[in-house]
Structures are given as structure tokens and as C-alpha cells.
Length: 469
Image 1: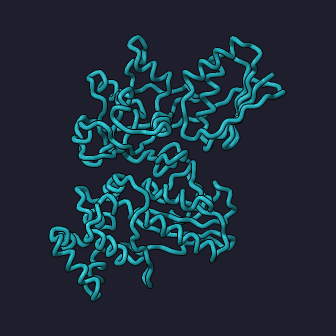
Image 2: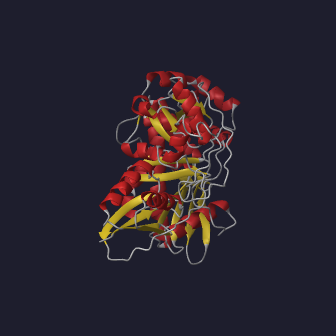
Image 3: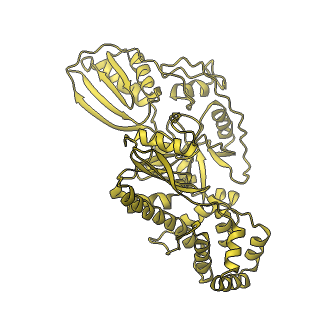
């Protein structure tokens, strides 16, 4: 009796089903594979035990893991098997196991061939994806690590099993992990860093050369081609330029268009409230039968205006004077760089070496406790009260709060503010569906806080669409 497997696949990409078809062909087993939207159905004849054994061996050897792979249901079936001839489109994915064999084997005619085109997922292999990335053994600021020796992964970094599976999936995403190796910490000046496994022929050849020279990693400038975060069992795409779903043109506004595409993916029938928590700009969106709009949009942060508001307020000017007296160099940076953005300002207050969003994230990750400080996240007539927000951070800094605890609290406060706002919009618009967006979700503190404190509202994170541009 045939066995049927129903594979939940969180993408319309056809390469995973294409790999299954290729393995069916190589195993010469009577089987059928088909894909309809986000479901792949595999029907296998189990009568020939020898062919079934070969098929299972080939699955273990050549079927890659995929980021989009979901639950698999296996049932007995009495369906008649019609041998399939599934065809896949070409995709910009990593070299598969067969490609790796050919490129790494000195006896292969494709040994070290950077022009090898993968045709092992029932595709034509005619699409050419160019890459001009340069890989170096020397670190420069904000570089990503290319893993050249996968056997050393546990010596170099601290990762969960789910992060390892994602890292070495056929899509080869970029993820941020904790550095374990002291040499790498010293070289980069970091405790946390983005890493990536070889993701195309060029990076694979670079890694082969490096490994032969006993170099376990290289550095390169990442292009956010596929940046993800793994939180619990969630694998969420933050930014991407390949293998993600192409957005439909539903709305001329880029943000509203992304929101509506995710609403459609979630099958919310246009009724949804969205939170776009981006480090560029935070906004809240609503879609219903009337239309779609940004109901709350934070005004652009302006450090110069914040300092003026401090100086115009009798209480805040005293706070600023105390802060300037205790931290004259920080105050000098404020005066010399009045155009700093929000996270550059926060990083400056925290006296971080690098002044950006990632630096504040990394500092917050150093805190291992539970529960942050109550940083003010109030609104005024202009919108979000940045003066309250920055003033609160300055107050805690003056009180001697450790920088890592303060950084952690910033993201926890932004998460709590978002949850409060979403609940208020829920009451106002009588909508129960929530969509999460924005690149600030690459911060695990914020993401985890929303998952834990807002879980009863079941916020939706897209499985096939990047949360930000």
C-alpha cells in the first residue's frame, strides 16, 4: 500500500519539490510528487523494498533542509500512483549536495568550477546569478563571517540546533549569533556577529581555499540578501533579495503594500492591524473594508529638537546640566553631531564604541536577567515623545544603571509600547488580527517580549515575505 506524505511548505518556491522529483528519478522508484501553493504531496510505492531503501538513502544524502519546511503528515493511501515529472524553476540557492561533490572532488570534470550550474532540483539551470563579493581574512567594521570550516562551528560560536539547521539550509541565510572563540572576539571587538555558510559557487570556492590553508572563517560585506532571525521555532525573514515571495502591487505606498501582502498571506480578509517596528520609523497600520492607512506614524527623530525641548523645560534643563557635568564628552558629541538618529543617540549615551542600532542590540544581549527598567514611551500632541524617552534613558544613566541593562530595557520598552498601542487600536477598530513588520524584529529582546506578552492575540509574522525592505 502506498504511503502519502503531506508536506507543509511555507513558500511557493518549487525547488524543494524539485529535489524530491530528482531523487525519485535517481532511485527509479514508483512515486509521485506535486506542489500546490504551500502544500507538497509525495506518494510513494512501498512494494519494492530494495528501491524504497535506495530512495531513503538518497533522501538522507541529497535532500537539503529548507527554511520553509513545515510539519509533515504521513498516512497510508490507496491512491493509484502516476509517475510524476515535476519541473522546477531556477532559483538563487546554494550549491546542493551533488554540486558540492562535483566541485570538491579532484577527479570530477567540474572540480573547482565556479561556473557550474545546478540542475539537481528538476530545473533547467540556465539562470545565471552574478556575485562580485570579496572575501578577506581581515576584519573590517560591520563585516559578516563566512564559515569556511563547518566542523569548527561549535568551537567558534554558540548556536541552538534550530539556528544550525537554518544556517546550513539550502537557502543559506545570514543570522546573528554569540561568539565563543576568544580570538574572534579579540579580532572583531564583538561578542555577537552575523554569520553565513557558503551560499553560492564563489563563496564555496573561497571557503575551500581558506580551509585548505587552515583558515576557519573569512569576512565579507553582506548585502542583506537573506537576513533572518530564529526565535524559538520561528524563522522570520527580516530583509531579503532572493528566495522570498515577490510582492504583488496592491498599493502604491511601499509600506502599505508590504502590509497588505502579508495580510493576504495570513488570509485575514483585509481586516488587520499592523505594527511596523522599524529602526527608521515606527508606525501602526489598519486595513478594513473601508481601506488601508497609517493610523499612527512616529515623527522623524531630531536630536537638535530634543535638546532644544530639554533647554526650554525647567526640570529637563537641570537633568541635562547634571548629565553634561558628569558626562561632558557625551554632551560634546551631542552638540557636535545634532543630526544623530535615534539609535546613534542611544549608543552615544551608553558610551558604545560603535554608534548604531546593531551596537545597542549587542549591548542589550549581554543582560541575562528578566524584566527591564520602565523607560518612558509616552505620546504628546506631536506624536511620540522623544524627549521623555531620551530623558528617561539619561536619568537611568545618571543613576548608575549598567549599560547592558539599559540597552535591554530600551527594546523591552519599545515592545511594551507596541503591545499597548495595538491593544488600543484593537478596541477602537474592533479588529482581532495582528501583523508584525519592521527590521527592529531582528532584535531578539523585542521579538521575544512581543511573543511572550502578546501571544494570546496570536500576532502574525510572515513566513515567506521579508518584514522590511
